[in-house]
Every structure is written in structure tokens, then in C-alpha cells.
Image 1: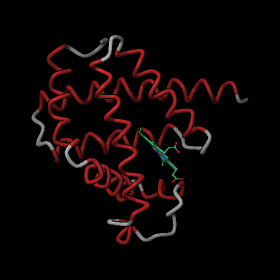
Image 2: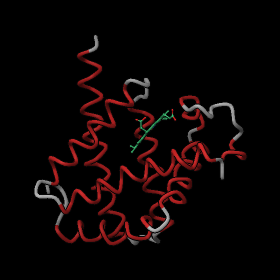
Image 3: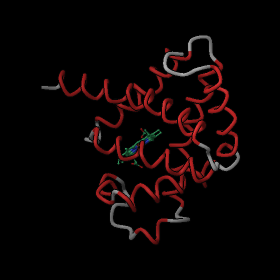
Image 4: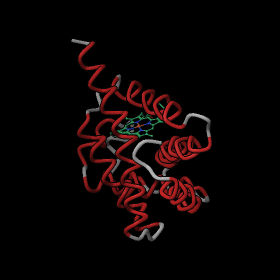
Length: 157
Ligand code: HEM
């Protein structure tokens, strides 16, 4: 796995266990913070007009939050596959494609990446070494997305 040491892979897998126990709670925390810190992103969602304080606990919002975490779960599971890089590229290229169709830009992904690290750090009480392992993982994931978004933008011109 380029960029990640075997120790860092173990850190990512073990710290993720905490999130995996309550995926919708983690997803909800991430998306709430995402809209709080970068409110412009709510406009892409069907609940664009719902005030933020009413989102928490809403079925539509929680189910979306759970879906986002489920994709991260697949990404963590990718470390157990024969070719983790190929599996990650497959998963995240698909996310780039489905989101490109919704006009979601690189900037929104950068913003989400920042929030994912922030929430994971708080929720799992990550120390510096663990934060670095996650930062490298997120760089890998979001690097795949940004490459595909750039490809799609170029080929749609
Ligand atoms: C990198 C992390 C992300 C993951 C894993 C993720 C995952 C998903 C999944 C699994 C779906 C449902 C399947 C589909 O319709 O494609 C979805 C839908 C959606 N995502 Fe994301 N997403 C991510 C980032 C973002 C970002 C940055 C935005 C920007 C605001 C966004 C906005 C949306 C919207 C608007 C929908 C459709 C919601 C609906 O119509 O109910 N996503 N996402």
C-alpha cells in the first residue's frame, strides 16, 4: 500500500472499530459538522431547506449519513483484500463519478475531508501518530477522487 506503513494500516483498522459500532451516529456527527462549518454544501441535498437544528435525528439525514460511513467501511475493508490499491481506486472512482453528476466540486470534497479527520480525531480520541495514519489514508482516498473529478471535467469539455 503506497504511502501507508503496515503499522498505520493496523491503526486505521483498529481505530475504525469504534466508528463501525455506531455508523449512523458517526455519519451524523460528520455531516452535521460539515454543514455547520461549510453551510454552502447543504444546497446539494434534498433537505436543503431544512434548518440545521432540525436535521439531527431526521430519517433522511441519518440514512444518508449511514451510507457515507458504509463507503468508508468498504475502504477500511479494502486493506484486507489482495490488492488494496485497486479496490480503493474502484470504490472512490465510483464516488467521484456519482458526485460529478450532481455538480459537486473538488472544494466540497476538500471540506469534507477536513471534517472527517476532525470528527474521527474527537470521536476516537486519536493521538498524533494515529492522526497521521488517518491523514495519509484520507490523502490517498481523496487523491483518487480529485484525479477522477479532473478527468471527468476534462472529458466533458
Ligand atoms: C467522500 C465522501 C463521500 C461519500 C463516501 C459519499 C457517499 C455517498 C453515497 C453512498 C450516496 C448515495 C448513493 C448515490 O446516490 O450516489 C451519496 C449521495 C449524495 N452525496 Fe455523497 N458522499 C461523499 C461526499 C459528498 C460531498 C462532499 C457532497 C457535497 C455536498 C455529497 C453530496 C451528496 C448528495 C447531494 C447526494 C444525494 C443525496 C440524495 O439525493 O439523497 N457527498 N453520497
